[in-house]
Length: 243
Image (cartoon, rainbow, N blue to C red; front, side, top):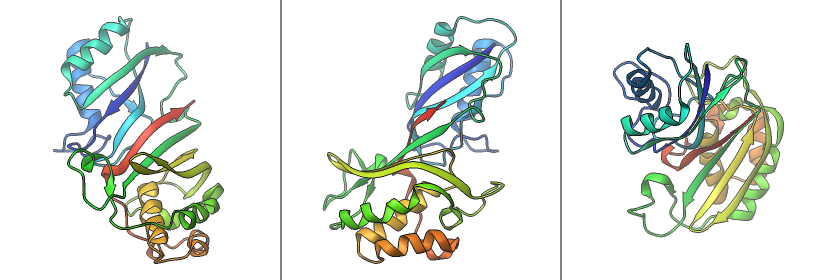
């Protein structure tokens, strides 16, 4: 039985999705809970890694179980055995060929910027507080160059194990979703820290520390040292994985 899980989580207190020695991760918590319910060890395969502190509204994972199982009972059991900051939104049976990572056509991420004068008690763990006005038209102009297929080495984080840095961005946009400025990007796949590095550099454009035109030059340079800082993780959400 090939089981697909759709998962929502607050990544604040976790060291990302992927298993790591001596650190609690989303994958570890789910596998531990699933073993208690199913009675066997399983390996849950995620659609992609989210970094420490990054959240998800639509992470997708799958695992194989040797036999049949009531999926409504599985979903209920997983939600009972995991902390309140992890929720299994759906559990469904899939064809044997389905793979949460390899079968994905694209992923959608959103990054939220809190642009108010004071930080927020309630939104601080789910957004980046950027103080001061931002030049939104300049930021919107800058991101146009990202759409299409490009080498994104300039926005690749250190420690990436990707075979190459070429990715296809289907679309990206900046919009006001009260009370946040929200950067949304959909691509076939993402590099380590790619979205956060884009946002960190984009905020420099918004602060008029670099021009929109320099954004395109940076992309073409394939030089990470010329990009801006990595935006903090708490503003980033994996919204959806498309198949």
